[in-house]
Image 1 (cartoon, rainbow, N blue to C red):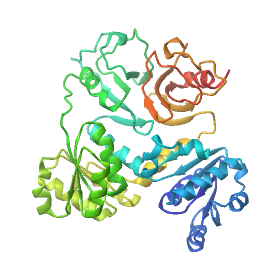
Image 2: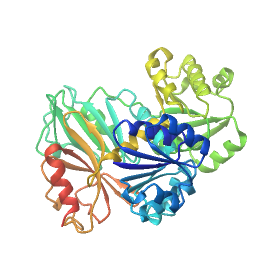
Image 3: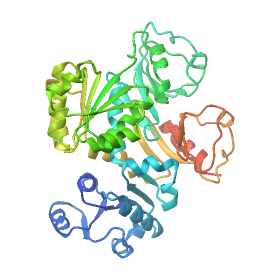
Image 4: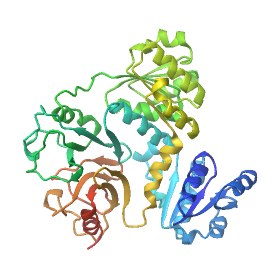
Length: 451
C-alpha cells in the first residue's frame, strides 16, 4: 500500500516504524526540519519537510496515488484540513487524529462528513477503551470493543451447571440487544442458529451493549458473580481522565478522580455529573490513606508522567486496592511493566501509541471492508458500509436472508451504535459490524455492497 503519514511525533513516528517493516511504501510529512532530518536517517521511508495541510506539499507526496492517508499531528485543525484536502486530491482512505474534545462534539456537528474524512479517532478515547476493558472483565478470556467502545465482545466458557446447557439459543432469556455470535467447540468456531444448543465447555462469544452483558454472563456460568457497585479511583486529570470517567459513569460505576491542579478539577467538575473530583496528590501515601483508596476495586493512573503513574499504582496496591492499571506513554516502559506485572502488582499497562496502532492497522485491508479483530477458530469481526445500491436497504434485519457463516452484531448510524434486533432496518451508509467465517465473508460483503 502507498501510505502517507502527516506528523512525526510520538504517534506518527511509532506507526511509521511499524508499517515500514511490512513492505508498505511510506511517506512521512513533518513540519520540523530538525525532526525530519533525524527521522530520515533512521526510518525506511520517504520523508518530506513541509506543511501537511498545504495542497502543494500533498501534491509533492503524490497524494492522488495514496491508498491510506493518516493525519496524526497533535493539532486538530491541521489534521482535519490535511485529511480533507487529501480526500479531494484522490486519496482512497483518509484518517484524522483529533482530541477527545472534538469527539465529544459529534452530537452537535458531524466533522467526519463535513470534511469528507473516512475515520476520526482520538488517542485519549482509544486508551480509555483499553482500560475500561479490564474494569469490565479483569478475569475474562477476551474483551474487545466495536463502534468506539459502545458495543463489547466478551468470551466465556459454559459451565457444567449452567442454566443455558441444552436449551435452544432462541429460547434463552437474554436481553434484547445481546447476541451469541459464535460458539467454539473442539477448536472449531461456528456461527449458531436459533435451534443450536450450548454444551458444557463451549467457548461462547457474546456481543452486546456493556450494561446488558452481565445477566448473560451469569447465565452461562452459574458461578460467575460480577461484583456490583464497583469503586474506581482515577489518578490524573485531562482528556484521558475525562474519557475514562465518562465511560465508567455510563456503566454505573462509582468513580473518583484525584488531580493536583485546582483549575483542572474545576474543569472536570463542569463536565462530569456523577464523578467525585478530589483536589489532591495521589503520589502521597498519606493522601491515598485519607481517601480510603484501599476500599477501591480499581486504581487507574492516567497522568502525563509515567513514573508518577507507576509509583501511585504501587502505593495503592500496598494499601490494598485489588486491581491497579496504568497509562504508560513510552511504549518501551509499557513492555517492561507487562513483563513484570505480577511482581509489581499491576494488572495492565496501556500505551496510547500501541492502542492507536492496533486501531489503525485494520485499515491495511484493501478491499471493501475493514478487519476489526480476528478470533480463535477461524472467525473475524469485520466492518463495512452499506452502499446505496444494496438490495437490503429499507429491509428489516429479520427479513434479510443472511449468508451462512455470517452474523450481524453491530450497527452504527450517524453517532448511535446498537446491537440490532430483527425489527431494525438497514439504511444506506450505515456502518455494519459482522462476525464471519472464511466462507461467509465474501457473500456478506456482496449482500451489503452490491445491487
